[in-house]
Structures are given as C-alpha cells and as structure tokens.
Length: 85
Image (tube, rainbow, N blue to C red; front, side):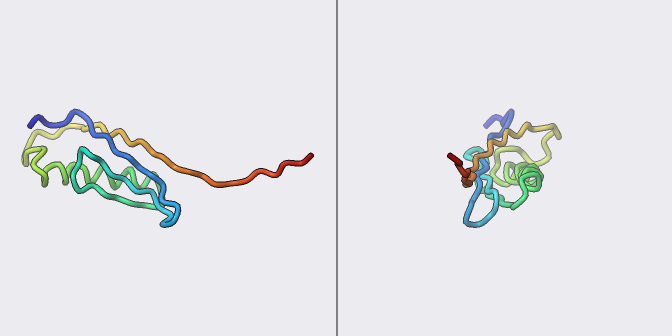
C-alpha cells in the first residue's frame, strides 16, 4: 500500500456536547473532540501519524515528511433576528 499524499478529515460541531468532533475515512480509529477548533486541529495533527503507523498504512521508521491535512469543518449556528416593521 502506498503512503498517503494527504489526509482528509471531517470536523462537525456537536451542539449537544458543545464540542467539535473530527473523523476520517482515511485514518481508521480517528475520533477526536474539543470545544476549541484550534485545539482540535492540533490534536488531529498529533493523532494522525500515530494511527497511520498503528494501522500499517505508514511503515514504522519511514522517512519523516510533512503530510498535509485537509480539515473540512461543518457547523450549524442557531440564532434569531428581530424584524421591526
């Protein structure tokens, strides 16, 4: 199996839990959550290499290199606006 050139990650806002949740079809076992999006991005950057090695997608001891992460965030904000006639 060829090593990935980049990784796509989906991040969705969990309104009930009050956290962002990140997963990826390309990284088995990746589930990370944080109330702060920037902290979530850092967490994903730390977990992805570990999980790629643990799942045998990247060989242990392979040459270090940067792996682009593409994190798509989806959220729903609920609010209201007062209309004055």
